[in-house]
Amino acid sequence: LPGLHEMLNCFDFEQVAKLKMPREGWAYYSSGADDEITLRENHNAFQRIWLKPRVLVNVEHIDMSTSILGHASSLPLYISATALGKLAHPDGETALTR
Image (cartoon, rainbow, N blue to C red):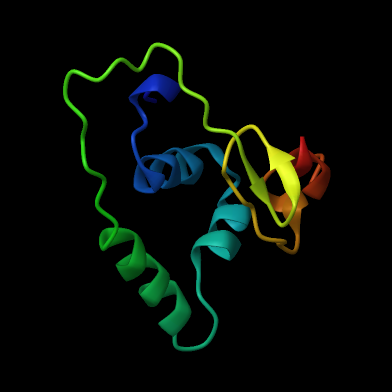
């Protein structure tokens, strides 16, 4: 498995999850409902995001903090509510909020 510092995008995390999660949990989380339109569109949306690399910019001290819905966050990452969180971790949804 790659180290965390080697995982560069959502697809890298997806591959590790596929290898680490129980088969039933992965089948649930990776599947789409009915015709899988939303699953396909989400995948396409992530492929449309391009980041502009900044060469020779000092990145020693970076502050990624922001606010999400009026609450301070040290990392601008939002995890949508999910069902059956214990399929991925014994602590379920509690693990997602840590």
